[in-house]
Length: 190
Image (cartoon, rainbow, N blue to C red):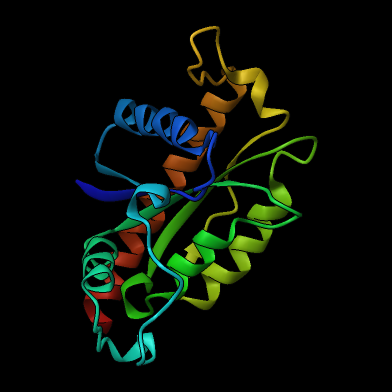
């Protein structure tokens, strides 16, 4: 089983990210082969980076950082669910990423973005660049929801369409391939 962490990036009141993350979780569960944890940054509530030592040293002073380190260290792969705010991904996600260093390395990541006309793709592209600096391999294949509010049903549940379901399968296929390959690198590096 691949230990998959799905990270929902938004924290503001009224956010829809956790509902989209729950939909992605169902898709990954149906796909099979994953041990899935959904991490909601709104519930995790990391303060702005407040560790004195650089993350690469892993000399964590605070319990919230030690817990976050343990969560990310145990992952084999990630799916980041991100909104697009002002042409970028949300600041709480950047903060969460920068808390750590070694824990992220040599793991693959899929990106699910959502927004208006651009479907959050500008946020996803920005995130890809930042993930690469942490030695995370961001997949080319992703899932994007344009005008994402159209995907909510009358009960307020998120429901993707046939295209998004196919896109998710393609992303998960690639996530499995890359995760298997990167596991070999982690075993021979760490």
